[in-house]
Amino acid sequence: MIVTMKFPRMNKELLKKFIDIRPVMNALNRRYSQNHEEFFKMYSEDCVINGYGGPLTADDYTRFFSKRSMRREPALTREMTNLSYKVGKHVISLAEGMPNEGVFPISKVDIEVKGTGRLLLEGSDLSAALQYIPSQGLPPLLSELRQFQNDVHRPPAVPRDVIVTNGGQHGIYQCMDLLMEEGDPVVLNEYTYTGAHVALKPYNPEIISIPEDQYGMIPETLESILSARLSRGLKMPKLLYIIPTGSNPTGTVVPEERRRKIYELACRFDFLIIEDDPYVFCNYSEKRVPTFLSLDTCGRVIRLDSLSKVVSAGLRAGWVTAPTPVLQKLELHMQSELLHSCTLSQVILHHLISNREALASHLKAARDLYRQRRDALSDALQGLTGLADWTLPDAGLFFWLKVRGVEDVHNMVFRTALKRGLMVVPGQAFSYYTNAPCQYIRLTFSRIRYENMNTATRHLADIIKEEQQLYLQKLPQRLATER
Ligand SMILES: Cc1ncc(COP(=O)(O)O)c(C=O)c1O
Image 1: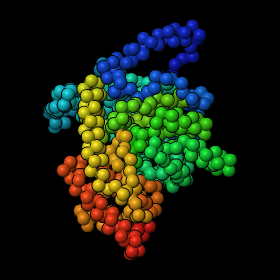
Image 2: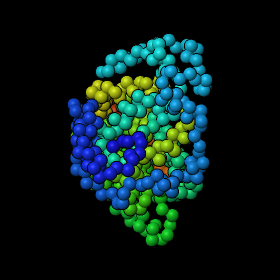
Image 3: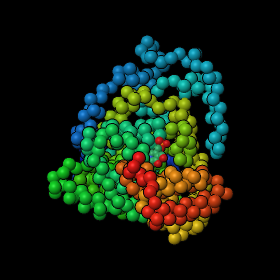
């Protein structure tokens, strides 16, 4: 449950009353989800969660925070902005540094949204949409997002809150700044989203790279690596970054069993989990998998959401859900970094999120469109049989192919393929060590024209054959290591 304030200590009677009214509260909390419960359900009915120990206390989090982030202080002027949204209109203010709305030259914003209808902003609504807002986000959007997260993930009752970001990448960047110290160890999949790597690079981290199979990160491998580190007295990681649904680039979906096991390891080895889940609504299998947030009994999950892949990438619509002490730090970061993310985008996001039925139908349509494209590219890829190995991705936007007979795809991607007019991403783009040899390539199916799929695959087959010949003849090639 997302609660934004601490409960006072409750006596037994009060606690009993509280427990008794929980079914009613749940029903109220789920006011939106009745029609779309299955679609938005990212939690397990089976509430047994194997966390270790109780929830972390506010003090516990300080051991995760970087010294840099501990030095952040609230900007008093931002606190005044927060205050101005709370006090009534009767208060005369000489306090805020807000511009006069009369100078805004935009007189109307009229947006037609498929399914939800028109969003018309004029007069005071428009003025508000063009004005400064609190760093955490537009207040009505925050209320809506809290409700949304409660409905969708039904997280265990740990004090948490949300903050609106400029997309998921912004959340990643903030989290790294919040948690990382120079040289800190961090757990990642062997191949993962480049945006996480580039956010980490300045901290010169020690990468604990966990290989994955077709079901994503292997908890047993993680466990043995962490146990070995512990017994050798090595510094232990404070964080694990994971893309649990439709990983970029591998397309894997981590099954519930593994998520629970990884969560247990977080409790046992004392680290936080950054759950970066922008493909959560691009899951093509009918089976819903509970999110890490929904398993988070101890307050160890920082969840990053983004609507970039299913609503708009340019709106920069994302939000972070985290335990309150973490959230407070992120808010301070936001104050110093960009005051707040774009108000107009937040107004649009609010319009979308608060029309839950329309949002669900839109997300279903988006998922169906991507599923169709995935299947079409999958058919076309049959032309690569014998030349590469891959599995059908259960979620996300990518095929991850291991090319046979080519030790490093770098030359193939940047010379042979480009020469034939085909662009694909070399696997090393998703390795922390971008100049290490790599046999993988990533193919995106989200935008390629249907009529180009077979042509692309034919080209790719020729390119692979040509490259395999280079390897057989041992001809000189430009490898990733030579860049
Ligand atoms: C796993 C992952 N996280 C974050 C992002 C960044 O998305 P956003 O547009 O929300 O910043 C991407 C974009 O490709 C991604 O694949």
